[in-house]
Image (cartoon, rainbow, N blue to C red; front, side, top):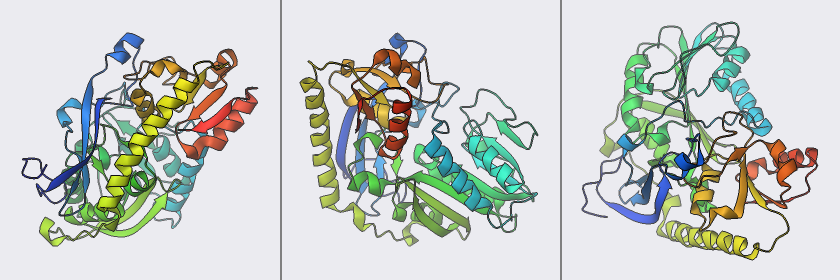
Length: 393
């Protein structure tokens, strides 16, 4: 790819080397459809992951921001899972621990339906305002009106005031082709507020690469962050990283920051040793082997007694369903989120059902899209009287 007009989103270099391709993936994994016909005809695009030879950043060079539209049909809430809810409660307790949020305000960019913002404000005794273009309408998700949600783009977040103590931005930056633009805008609005803190959370590309998280590669994500690259992005955008931790079974990077000096891109050094040629070659090889394994798995199951189902229709599950040569091998897709149930998976067209539907389906294999939820899924299956084998994809 060297010599093309595509530039690195972090350092602007054109020295980008492709290492992974996938064709015909749904543009929005987390958009569900009202009918199977709509789902199987959902718009698709190609993915080409490339590494910047200058700074080590990873991006999808086929990404087209004009093709990605977030609206009320976009649904990716994980809060119906007990394990995810426990993680959210622990995070809220951590952010509220020092008491500095009390009687102040929290702004969340990419608030979803406001579940985490409401949890944090109740824990911290503060007010909150959230922005998300995928909201159905403006509203107040809690009874006391301490949290308000606005159906607006992230860049419309103009509510930072002298009362703002914390800005939260979780799983948004990886969806932006130029995240520095948003970060600089927020910084400019927050620069006059003394002591304001920032919390960012993004998927961890190091775990994805080292453990072949093939199903984490989706078109919605133009960028894939490591600890070095998220630090570099923040420094370029005028922030100082105060802490960075691995979270959620090492699947997330949990980052805290404060306002710092703006730095030119060429003054920010990245030393991302995790992105060696060997790492990328191994990822590509193991990705091909994993796809082959699952295709063979379903071919061998053709004479099985009972059907297989997939549990977990997040981005991992949707990516998996669309990678299979014959998605008809899976009878249904299960999800705890009632806003997904009764709708259809983009691309593969699988109907999304509630766990209770398994009493009728009676699968002999349940595939779990994320290993972090396996214990929870097994517990729910037993409560439903199901004795299916549970495998992680």
